[in-house]
Amino acid sequence: MIELSSSPQKLLDMPAEPQALSQRLRFIDLFAGLGGFHLALHQLHHTCVFASELDPQLRELYKQNFVLDAGLVRGDITRIKTADVPEHDILCAGFPCQPFSKAGEQNGLDDPRWGKLFYHLLKIIKTRHPRFLMLENVPNFARHNNEKTWVEVKRLLVKEGYDIRVEKLSPHQYGIPQIRERVFIVGKLGTTSLEGFIWPKKIHGATDITSVLEKNPSDARKLSAQALACVAMWQDFLDRCPREISLPSFPIWTMEFGATYPYEETTPHAVGAAVLKGCFGAHGESLADLDEEAIFKALPSYARAKQAHAKDEPERFPRWKILFIKQNRDFYEQNKAWIDLWRSQLHRFPASLQKFEWNAKGEERDLSRLVLQFRASGVRAKRRTTAPSLIAMTTTQVPVITWEGRYMTTQECAKLQSMDKLKLPDAPTRAYAALGNAVNVEVVKQVAAALLSHEPVTHPCSTDSDIEEASVAADKRAMRVW
Image 1 (spheres, rainbow, N blue to C red):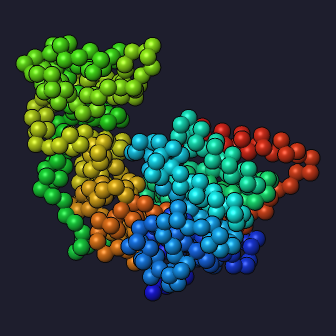
Image 2 (cartoon, rainbow, N blue to C red):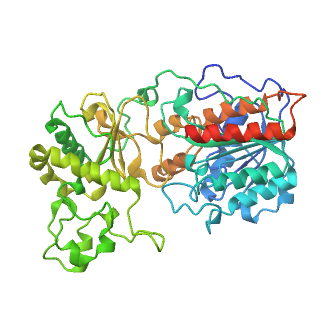
């Protein structure tokens, strides 16, 4: 059993409890994970009456962390009868992000495994009509399918009688050194109940990742020999790049250095092997003497596949990919002299380590002073002000504390999620995954405090259509910012 009454991190201007609602409210925690919503609302003195989590290990851990009876913490939400969900005042749900994430297939509400879970959530809302809603998802949720997904979700919630607001928030905006943008959706029963609602005030002061770090912790996972060699290779790249040349703001794709396959008006798949024999593939490898299978294997992986296109349009890469390829080829042509002396090292590393992102403009070109992350999209270098977003899918993307030659520990990552008071899964792999899926407790606490203390602004002369137009306009402003 742990003590949950103290906040993991004090933030400026945050009320200790809702101002307009002094009574304890009942909440349910769906897709609960480690219990980020629970911890935030507990700190605001509210009571959990029901939780649902699919993962059996996380479910047991949830019971331990929050000392709840087994009957209050259930499993698969699709197997729970809505009548078994008790009456509650606040419904919280960080529903699965896989259907909406850019890292996935983006099947949205039609995703065969995860997309329909929102409708199970909606069933509970239809049955119990809690006074407040607090939902969370990845930032792409609001933009998914040209915003059609969000429009449909909002329509369904409004149909149930809720006034809805949406905003993109990140822990670094509230004094926590992690950039982790997430969409927060809040709702309150009553068609104009959130009129005049103000999202929690953002803090614009600087953050520093060292505020959550321990000094050379004994349980930290050290960088492998390959990872250290990769860091040394990219440091050599930075050292060789003349100081008068600005480091690229676009991702560096070294496989484009020397490549000549067509990419602007067509694709390798569209032109075929016969045309490609006259080209150079990844890293400038000649394709002349290769068979068809070998030719496509010698291309960058992102340039091999057939591209979806309309019947009456030519097959082309997306505009962003065309731009990145052009920028990399131009950068190479302008800097061949020193790049050719450097790039012989690349063959020792997998493709993901052959790409590099410099997100530290203006900083000294010294990787040992920066935070790194080994991502599928490349090695990313960032300032020490913030950690990159924690990732659930793999432990290889845990932030790297380069100056100590190690990855962040699970406890340090827990601090980034304001969860350092919670017991985590024993296996580091599962702990990192759970933290990567979690909501940030302090951000939720800020949002909850604002939502639960809000009293609607009344405008006697305003009609329902006026208020709806204002709501739509507010959503559009938020979309433009994103």
